Image 1: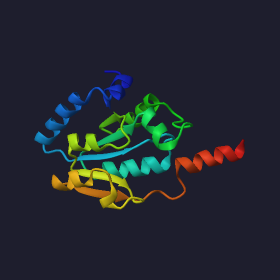
Image 2 (image 1 turned 90 degrees about the horizontal axis):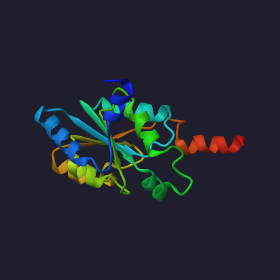
Image 3 (image 1 turned 120 degrees about the vertical axis):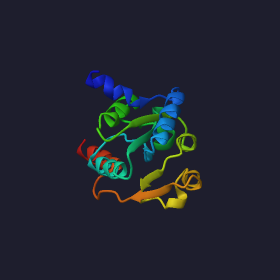
Image 4 (image 1 turned 30 degrees about the vertical axis):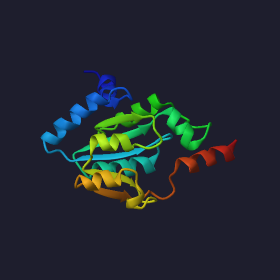
Amino acid sequence: MKGIDIIQSKIVGVNQYDQLNELVSNWRFLKKKVVFTNGCFDLVHLGHIDYLVKASDLGDLLIIGLNTDNSVQRLKGPSRPINSQNARAMLLASMFFVSKVVLFDADTPLKLIEMIKPNVLVKGSDYKPEMIVGHDVVKSNHGEVVTIDFLPGFSTTGILEKIRQQE
């Protein structure tokens, strides 16, 4: 298989959840520890890489729930996303420590979390664990909810503001 095929095989579209469900069932059977996180990942920067590496270190497999373009627009406004869902998915899937990138069109990944039932649910430390969408699902399945501190000085909003100032 060629590199581009390997990357594309790690991406699960919004209409491909049956394939993901089967794969996750196999991982559970093999006693793999599944980590789940989500986000827009619009302009991937060092802060994202640091966060995702730390998340992947919490288990055997990392699944990233990725907001579709429509979902990002509803959450961030009409000027976002900067990069298309395909570009964002390909970039994330190209990372060796990412097992799957799953697109979702809802405002939250709750349905994905209910389906995947990850062993570990991860978000940034700007969230309190009990405020993280899906925390109750993960806890009721004997999983853990973990928050990770952001790398100071790196944010998509900060990058966009810097670009605007240079115009």
